[in-house]
Structure formats: C-alpha cells, structure tokens
Length: 468
Image 1 (cartoon, rainbow, N blue to C red):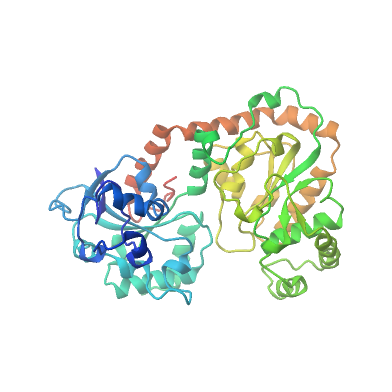
Image 2 (image 1 turned 45 degrees about the vertical axis):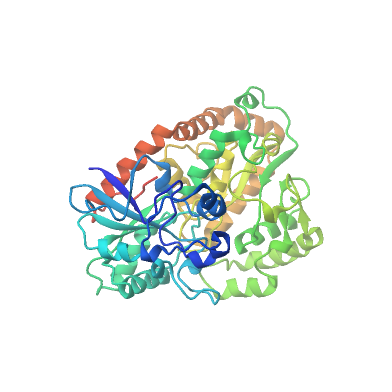
C-alpha cells in the first residue's frame, strides 16, 4: 500500500492545506490566490521568501517522512489501492483553529478547498487533522469537531484525527459511549511530536540556540554536585505553584537549581486557587497541606523569580535551549509536566530533556507517564526508589506521593547520591541510547510509516493507536 499526501498547492515549497490566506495577505502583496478555489501554481522564489515564516510554522509531520506528494488535481486520486491523505494542521491551540475564542470567526474546516470536499467521496481519501504539539484536550473538543464536520458535510469515517494527547483513544471511546447516535466515527491516533522535537535537537545539537548536551564521560566519576535537584518551570500552572510553595516552605528553593517567575503564574490569587481545589474533589484537597501551601507561597512570593540559564524564561521554547551545565551540577531532575489535574494525559518534551543529559528523573505529571516511557523502550528507577506515584489515579494522592518522594531524594546526602548513581548508570546510558536510536531518520521513518499503514488498514482496531 502506497501512501500519498495531497496538497492544493505544490511548488517550490508546499503550502499547507486549509491555510487561511487572509492572515498573510500583507505578506503576499498583490498575488491573487485562494486555496478554496484550488489554483495550483508553481510559486516563484519571491513568493516563497515572503511566505516562509507562515509555511514553516504550519508544516505537518507528514513532511518529515518519505511519502509521495501530489496535487489535488491528480485524476488518479481514489482510483487505486493507494491511500491519499489531505493533511490540515491545527494552528497553535485548538480554540484558535475552531473559533472558540472571540478573535476568530472561521474554523479550520471552513478553509478546506472545494477540491478537497469533492475528493472526500473518493476511495481511500482521508482528511488528516493534526494537533500534535499541545497535549491538553477535553471531551467537548470532540463535540466541536463532529459538529464542524457535519456542517462541512464531511463523513466522520473519512477523517483521521492525530493528537499528542496520549490517552486520546480512550477519551474518544468515552465520548462515543455517551453519544451513541454517532454510528461511523473518526479514526483517532497519537503522535508524540514533542519527543520527536527533542530527538531533532539531539541530532542538530549546536545548530539550535547553541544547544549543549552532556557527554557520557560525566558518568565516569560521579563527584560532588552543587545541587540535589534541577527543576525548570515556565508557565506556573496550579500543580507547579503547589510544588514550588511546598519547596519554599521547606527551604529547598534557595539550595537547589529551580527556575520560576511569578509573573508567569496563570493564577493571580493563590487563596482563591486553593479554595477552588478544595471545592473540586478531583484536585488537591489534602487539608494537612493547605497551611503548608499558604505559608510556602508567602515565602515563594518574597523570592518572586529565580533564574537558572535563561533570564527571560517566557521566551524559552520546548525545542532548543539545552544547557548541559545545569544537569552536570545537579543529581536529579524534578520534571513538572504540562498537565497534572486533567483528564487528558500528556508527555511533553520536558520528560525527555533529562534523558538526553544522562539525568535520573521524577515526573510530576499525568498517571502512567513512566509506563508510557517504557513502551518506547526507556527504563525508569523503580529498583532504586518508589515509583508507585505513576499508577496512582487519584490526583490528590499522586501529588502527595510524588512530593514525598521528591523530598526524600532532596534530603539524601551526596555520598548516598554517588551510591545511587553507581546503581543507575546502566539505566542512564540505556535511555540515552534509546533516544539516539530514534534519532536515526530511517528508524523513525520506518516506525511511523508502519504504524500509519496499520492504522488505516484496520480502522476499528483495538490495538495501540500510536504513530510515534
């Protein structure tokens, strides 16, 4: 089975499908172009230069694997046993592309070309909707997806929805159970673009923001390190604020390598945040921690900001910005993942950062994150410390477990950490080897192609839906 990617525009550079040209008309000058009218052109160098920034930010992951690219006027589409994918990309957040905020009135599907809607009736033709960088997802997003597909008269079973949410298939099944009127449904899949992005970092190393990566020689002689833990924090979501408050209350902020800036807090009123969590039983409600959180936040507020390697934390992105020194001068990473108190589960590039630096880690994130890493071949540290937090579904209990573990690791002596490193050195080397093997283009491309074909051939499969 051959997989073809169908574009409305093929030229010197591929213009992503369903691009809203009204947002870039100023860059295009007087060029008369509209994807929905399906004008196929071979663009000039000047046109490509003027649209490079738009094109680059809209690239689909399908561009990174060896798949045949054809234009949507190809008369053979649907006339063979080949598969044809028409990729469209959710730009930035889901809300932005599906008009869920006041600044946007058109959806991603409103910008589909007329040719695409004509081809949807063809055999083996699918619209491939990609939402693979952000991990947050909620069931009402499915409502919007199905509603917009209905409005656009697109059959549900001719759509493949690809998400970075690791439990997207279960969320979709739960949605379908509650909405039994949906007879034929979308095909949903999972793709960890964040992991792939960190692999690309490792491949390019010094080409992106002066990346530097720890060398394996750091494990030859584990000597005294300045800090016990490293914890990088950007947007201060509730679980990060709670963790930072507990660290501050116990006096662990100053003596550890922990970055944060309260100007980046998503919650301005800490007391109201705590009250909200008490009222919401799915979130942190342990009353024994309430006083500790409040006193800790007061101490945290006095510090307000702590910089590690980049002063402007708000400018730091998930890709690039790797600094080996901060890993070499600390014993373990306390990874504060993007999501914690959420039904959607997400493993971002944050969980792969310590792996590429031969660093052990504790992850403050979704349940089964460690299990997820093991599915890719990585190993964790259950033989050395308690990792039962990973299988704890109760967010309140999971937070307390991961906090108690983090505290115990911070309180270990330097001699104890040297002993731990002697035990986990094979694991650290193994994990770095796993990610480097994925860094090889042929390994990644072969895996993606195989999984993509399996997904399409067996739409109703109960098997794993991971593309990568």
